[in-house]
Image (tube, rainbow, N blue to C red; front, top):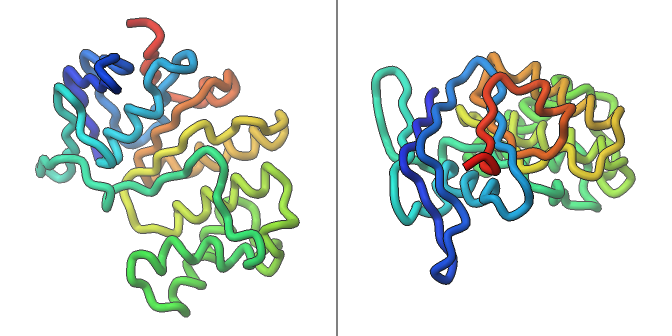
Length: 205
């Protein structure tokens, strides 16, 4: 999967918050979007995910020679804050990703357990989400994205507010995923920036 960005701008109430001349994200690595608060990182993620159209410019997805506009059906989103259901089990929270795609319950739970294995949380399958640490919560959110059969995973500040050990765990998970999906992250975290193969600096425009 490739994401091609050309001349993209976004404005709110007449004030431009994002202007990207060009960028290319390709799978096989982690693609980072960096820049100070207010530079448009989350706005660009929303455009890439097909959640809003840019005011100018284009974003094109290409795969196997086919080119198309962004679609939310291609993207698994890991938002700031994991938004887990606190009274449900870890497995239930992860399986939601597959259930949302119409997968039957038994198969969704199998996917959930496999995804939790990938993020090092297999032993927490039955735990209630409300008892998780911040780092565990973020890894469960990543597992939920893995559980969805979508070629792009977008993570918005996935290590924000985590201590260094928890942030390293999240960075390691993203590193393991890069051969399977196109990973795009917005981040301020130097640790995560070091993991990125491509960096788009919105503060440098």
